[in-house]
Structures are given as structure tokens and as C-alpha cells.
Length: 183
Image (cartoon, rainbow, N blue to C red; front, side):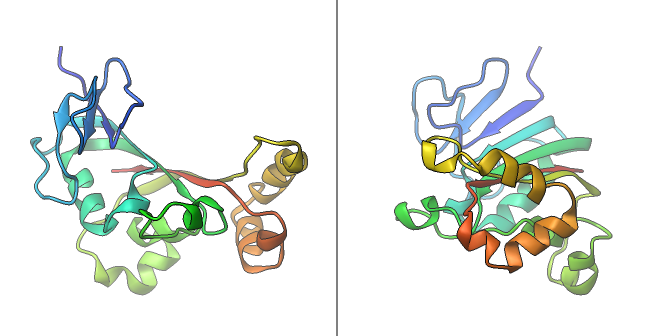
């Protein structure tokens, strides 16, 4: 049976049972394709689940989101991980073109305040956002408070906005944003 799960920009993170897509013909990559080139080599409505980890910050992501939506099944999910705008990785990696806020993807969700105010810029939208979470790094002793900060920041969308718009985001920089969008 052919997989209905797509791992976009997989690099060396090959997932068994998934279609692994990357721009490079690395070992384990099933489909070699540049996601900035449309259309993707898949029919409409093929995938129930799409994973896009550490990819969108490298590309012009609006056309990519449009194409992902096209190849997703109704009620399918798209899980995105991108660096938060306060992440040190934004500035270390010279291939990063974009930075993201917790509300960036709201522009592409039907009925969100961002889409209602400026959604006319886009000819597509996801039906809902299942999850939007700010993730903090935990890889050194310097980050001992981060699990507590992460829990507090993600306690509500209001707390996420307060975090991003105050000195807290500079005092406690985040690592990534995790978002799950539903078609």
C-alpha cells in the first residue's frame, strides 16, 4: 500500500513508512524535488499527513503552503517546525531567509483574526490550527528555566502574545515554533 504520509525536506531524517522528499538525492530519499518548483509531483488530495520540519525558513513559503494544501486530503494535517524569531539559529544559518512568530501561520487559517484582516492576500486557507506552540531549547545548563518558561508561555494564546511582545522574548529566547494546520 502506498503511503499517505509525506516528509518534506527530510534531509537525513528519513521516516520509515513515509514518502521522504528532499532537494538532494540522499540515501533514503524517495522523491527528489525542489519545493520552490510547482507543481509538486503528486496528485491533488494524496496525503493525510504532511511533515515540514526546518524547511520553510529556507524558502519563499507562501507558494509552498499553497502546494502542500493542494496535495493534502480533506481533514489532513500539516505539522510545521520553524525557528522562532528569537532563536539564535536564525542568525547562525546563512541559508535562512525567513523568521516566524507564533501567529505567522494564522494568516493562512480561515476565521483567524489575521486572516480576517489581511487574508485577501492569499487565495487559499487551512480550515483550522490544531496546535501552535513555542518550544524552548534544553541542550545546556544555561536553559534550566526553559521547561518552566515554556509551560507558562504556552498556557494560552494571550500568554504567547505577551511573551513575544515584551522583554521576556529577549530575556528567554525560544528555539522553535510547532504548528499543526488542518485542511
